[in-house]
Amino acid sequence: MTTTLGKDRTGTGELPDLLRHLDIEIGVDAVLPIAEVAGLTGNTQHTLRYYERIGLVEVGRDGSGRRAYSPESVSRILFISRLRASAMPIRDIRRYVEMVGRGDGSRSERLALLEAHRGRVRQQMAEMQSALDVIDFKITMYAGGLAP
Image (cartoon, rainbow, N blue to C red; front, side, top):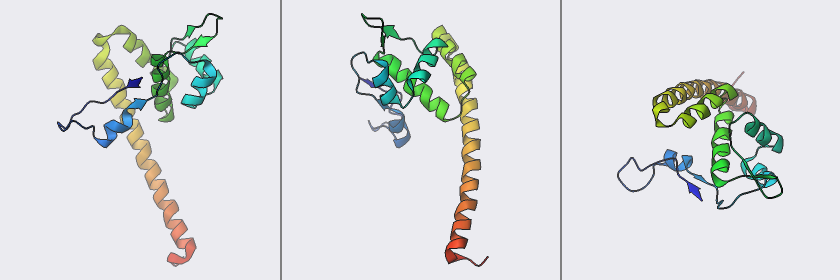
């Protein structure tokens, strides 16, 4: 299964690099047990159970009552993982998931939430770039490239 988040906005039939990066190729066409989903997504089993418990992802059960993750569940977990990696708080992810559950009527709210988060991420990236510039300067200095 391929979940495509981006669309061709260039008119060339190809996705720009950024949109291609957003495509999630999970290669899953059947349900998976929690251990495989943990390995695939980089989350711990504890985290996956937590996401289920707080309502971020719905997880079915197999005939023995064990968790059985659908391709859609895995895609959502990957998306949540990217939001968490960008420091989006769980409360905001919960709000987002609740809005998704309300359907298309909440699109503008979801857009606003994601745009606000994008602004915070861009600010963090600028701060990190500034820190990296200072580190690079010091490395150059200590390596003999500059006088102290």
